[in-house]
Image (cartoon, rainbow, N blue to C red):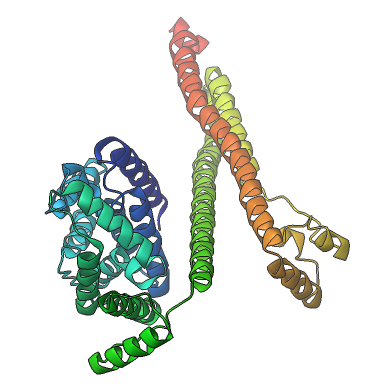
Length: 428
């Protein structure tokens, strides 16, 4: 993704965050900012899988951020139209290409139920929007959606009716991408089987016992329904704990991935801006030096402005180079560093002088310790942030020198031309 597109995505993220906090009713406990962030993460994951081009990836990400912003209307019905309006206004204000606007609008429009995607990115958008159907979070998300509907509609839905609605929806739903069919569909089918199993248990109107389980299995066999075993309270508790742990792990992984991508993009932006500054000033200096002696000999009163311009350009280049200059480390670690969990193996500068066997051993130690792994990821993001701060500090100094220096040089040229004319011209 280009630097400009990344900057626009950052603005879109900030806009949507403020939009949900200020304009969307808190009663929407499912269609909220958290859901939007999860859809964005799912879109990014599928975009990586399909190696999308920058323009398609950008349009998809914009659509993901805006796809449910229309809930600011206060009702779910036709919220897509409001989402499209908000996305279009935003993209027009930032002068996005018409093709990008068309793609983003098509992705949002495709999420209307029943979904009607017509391209790869709209397929991804639709699958990401309903990706929770194929995760272990399904039952928790389903509960939130029921709470939302009951809070925002006059007619309330009881658990039994809601279960039937979900069964019918999951039976009729289909994923559009191969990625979703491979990774999400099997889990969705397990969720559907569990819903049907619960429906059978409720229909039996008794707490499941061994006899009841057999009765349910017979009943299920007649209806050709796959039945999951009826769990004990202890098993249910362990399953809930495991599901909660899995959700926490996924949330942590998503957070680290988003933060890492964001900081990497910011670093690339800083390097790009530094390269622009180095290139521009190098061109100016080369032009100045090529004609410097001739100009100074024939116009000695312009010597000071010329040298001042050279000094400004050289100084701007120096700070731009400082912003991009890499820092070299030893590239070695000791077994004691690994045992004490002091070294960060996620940064190449800490291991590039080690042989493969030593590095493999160290990485296995890292992967075997959850705390060590998370500590390394936290340190990696922290020190990348420190490097970023240093880059942008030098880059700001370079741009300030260039901006204010040019103003000073122009003033110096004006003074030299109008107040320090050559003596021969004054006598003439």
